[in-house]
Length: 114
Image (cartoon, rainbow, N blue to C red; front, side, top):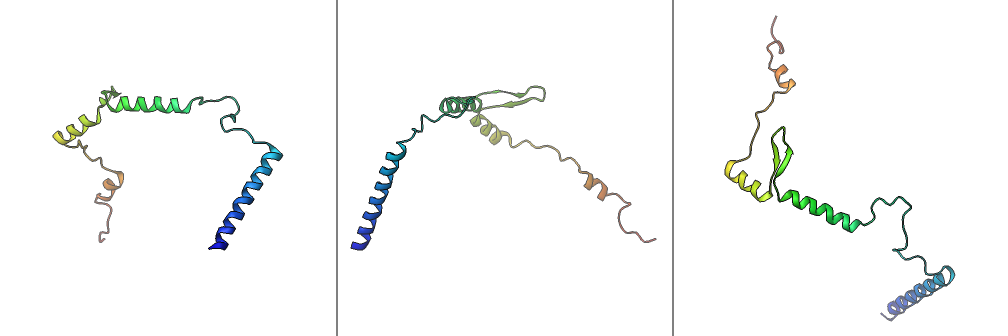
């Protein structure tokens, strides 16, 4: 146990020595806030941009509006949509036949005896 404690103290002392030596030789270095990417800076305030995106998404999730007016597609609040599904069920579309399904059902395909 004593050897382990002495080893840890030695390693901590070495780290402190090397850190002090680096600061003396090269200086403290730039602070993270002083480092700026080169121009053009496209996102000047990321926190503000994130708040704006979240506010826009929140407004769309909790309001009514058109997604595609020509096709009659709307968006609605999530609570209202869930209530609508509970009351009316999930809307479905008639299945469209695929080309493989129509060709495999043709009478010419198959092994006939001739």
